[in-house]
Image 1 (cartoon, each protein chain N blue to C red):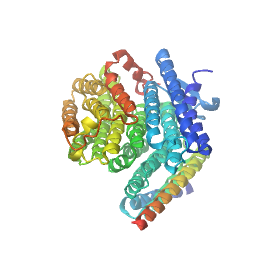
Image 2 (tube, rainbow over the protein chains, first blue to last red):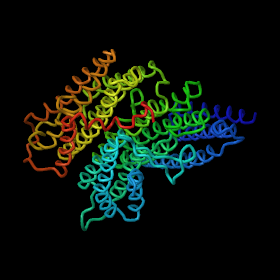
Image 3 (cartoon, chains in turn green, blue):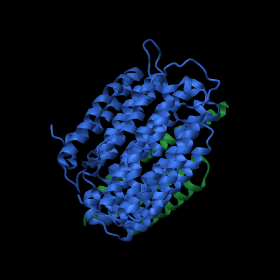
Length: 95
Length: 491
């Protein structure tokens, strides 16, 4: 039951993030939206793990490992994007 | 050493090189990259020889853990052909880039040079990982590595326009990869594995699988820059330095395309249905026509070449309905070979074209097509390079592009889908139009009558263009390589 709630919450986050990423023009807001979207995907993945659909187990550890890797990748992407936005702001200040 | 280690070597060599080059500084990184280039080419050729000799894909279970628990590498003919292409293009670009990013004896190291060499190695390693991997999650990691290495390449100049282009590219790429990851989650929930070969036997046409396939396809299209998700490509590829543009246009967009092939014909053979494949090819056809028209309308040389990439990517997608509608037939084999040869021929031709255009822009000080009159006299070799690469893009015999487009054309007619044949012919004419536009202005006598002086690296660009033409001379048997281990014919 709780897995379903987490899955639905994840889906809601995905929706909000997707909307923000597509509609917002401001770079920082889009980066935040990307993080919401990523968080939603990880929640959905977690719900999948809880249901253990694949292995037929009570809970499946493989998605946990994938989520951890995904969080690291999303963090790296966020830092890259923020660094780029900062450089862009500096370039705009100069002229 | 068993042949199974070869793909591991192909991935690890550039990846280790990148890590080691960071403390070495710009000069050391340059030397290391130039030393690794022939080594990596040797590994790629060895892989191709083994795959061709055995007529079977190379498989290697990492750490001897077999799927579904472990991760496997699987290198089939498609991967082998693309790995050789990647090694040649990266190697040629590296030697070419010594002119712009080399650190000569006695000069100070620059920040750009220090960034360029490790990034080049990173792109190479990520490309090889995309080609060797055999599970959906490793594909995701490879895609992200490719993006993270390619994005800074766009912004190497540090100018405001290129920073904006890089940010836009990153946003498209991140949206694409997160959609892809959501698809992976749903796919795992439905089947409990991510190994491509194991998945193929477990998934059916259920709704979660179809939704996952749609999400993953959308994500990969954004990364491959298929129209209408191509908006990031022209400013990014036109704004990057010539050597970087060559690699971005030749290899980086092909990585996500190969994953799309694995998804459609490996994981889900026949499941998305003929209608979905028609839509995909329809987008490809729109890319060919609109991309070529946009290229015709460009004022700037580099943007023209970038829009030409948008158009040429469209050809890659014509193979989908031809294979989907006639699975397992000779026609499907033709379409498959045509699509893969197009990817390879375009890689060589576009790398050559970007390098040639870079040389012209550097010598003339601008890249306005209107004002390049006289370039043919001042820069004869880059002009010939541009023309030869143009022949491949047009599909004029005997070039590699001709072989690819002829195979696709024949397959389209055999499959009774004549409309794709029309698109291929129109695309060829439009391509001829924009190549002619550049060459005709360039060969006019004009204000650039500097004495003909060899530009550094012009020979390398010319060799790439000649390779793209010579591909058409390969005996048909050699194209058999890309048929080996085709996933839609069973593991």
